[in-house]
Image 1 (cartoon, rainbow, N blue to C red):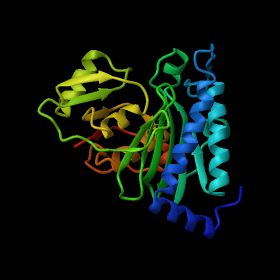
Image 2 (cartoon, rainbow, N blue to C red):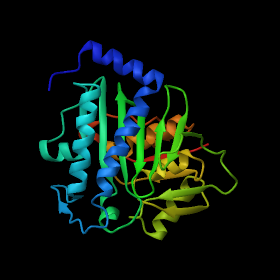
Image 3 (cartoon, rainbow, N blue to C red):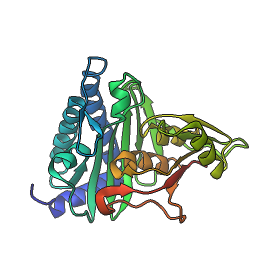
Image 4 (cartoon, rainbow, N blue to C red):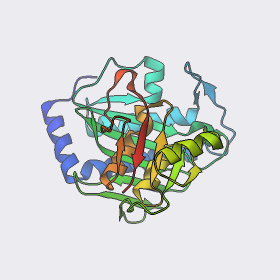
Length: 268
């Protein structure tokens, strides 16, 4: 694929600033979600990738839709997508603008019939996430960033978009954690970040629930890939939250192997 032309990059930036880009990628993610729903509860079998993570035909079909639509809207902008990277290998690195795509985050839960799986599309510029959309196919719920600096939004069942914002930190903050943690690990981790209660949940939906003010933190010690969290990070950031690393810095993208270390996502 030819690199994006100067005209495409100029339009990409204009669409980012106006909010048109976030609306379009939310529409694309919703199209991918419709594809995924066609496979849900229909006995989909997961294969194992080289890193032992699961993949299904739903992941691949959703990713095809996303890549085709993005290439049609903004041709030539580099993409780093989970299944594409698994099949073709990761690029050596990305500078400037690039997409981070996870077509089906939470594949294990999807195969098991749980609802907490999501479609994720994010735009990165100069190593920082600047726009994103997340869709929960099972509940027909979507979240997206808005115009640059213009807040975050949520809708359900194709209704109108409504603004969302993180809540002020309450006296008894509640954290979300990965299902992979034991109860003892979860308790240690949430108390390290000043929380008194916790709930386990799959996928990037954790970031969106903090963004809409229902929870307060998501601490993570184990490894994640950048495409797992970039879209949720964009929504959280637009809603007034943040993700920071153990040294107190903001999370950056385009790192070696597109791998994240420890971080904590925070609301107000």
